[in-house]
Structure formats: C-alpha cells, structure tokens
Image (cartoon, rainbow, N blue to C red; front, side):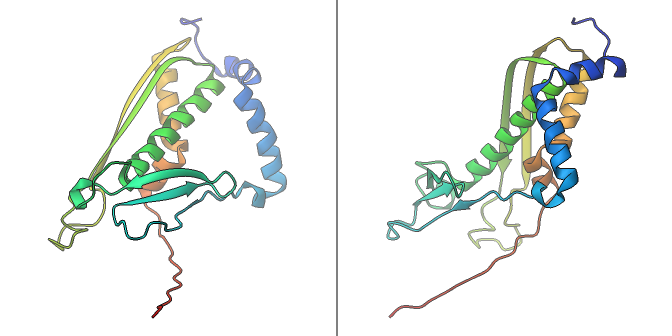
Length: 192
C-alpha cells in the first residue's frame, strides 16, 4: 500500500472505513439540522484557596469533570515554578490540540501513525508584565511547534495534506494565531 496513489476514487473507500469519518458524518447531519448544537463551551475555574500563598493555586478543568491541576508561578516573575505555570498550560493546550487533530485527520486519510511528537515552545520578555519596561508587550512574543510524524501507508503529498489540515482544523492553533477578544465581567467586594 505505500506505493498506492491516493486519488479521489480511493478517498471514498478510505473514508468509508474511517471511524472518525463515520462519526463526523453523524455530527454533520446533526449540525445541519440544528446549527446551535455545534456550539460547545469549554471551561476552567480557579477558586482561590490558601490565598496567603501568592505563588501557587489550582485550576479545575471542565465544569463536569472538575479535573484539579496545580499551578505555580514562573521563576521569571518571582515564583518557585514548582508546578506548571499558565504559559506551560498554554503550550500544553496547543500541543495536545495539534496532536489530537493529527490523529483525527490521519484516521480519516487512513495514514497509519507509528510515532508522533509535538513540542510547543513559547517565549516572552517578562519585563512588560512586571512593569519594569512598559514598552515591552505583555504577551508571548513567539510561539513555535516542533512536529515529528512517523507514518506508514502514506506518501509526501498525503502527509502535506495531513499537516495543512491540522493547521487549518486545530482550534487552539487557529485561536492563538488569529487572536481573540476576551470579555471580562467583574464582581468586586470590599470587606472590612
């Protein structure tokens, strides 16, 4: 099969055997009938505990599962960095979304993945966030993805289709790449 040419004729039989494609067909039908059902909400929540400790907190991921995750503050801004920091979580979010997208698309294309490795690196000059130099933007200045894919039953053209499809379909990649406005509601109370 490695030398097999992938034409549109072959694509139908490939998709018919893909579990991802089968599930996407069901979802497509559902979303065509009810576009509102395509809207999902992801969430995370921090409920402050041990507020006397400025360097550590915990975030619960997902409203239903409430998976707890310890967070530490980076050494570069005065913390101990003894737990993953929010920047680490941002990198983890991009790496896991990109790899998941690779898996879904490779299943649809019937590419047999042997190994994947996605490493995300984000860099920031922290002088802006610390107000040491207000001309430095308070944001990651660069983000980079190192991608390794080892696969069977494919060719270079199909692998390019896979990678371009992942870039196009990875929600976190597209969100970070384009940016998104963030709204903020506040409820502040002062206790004496």
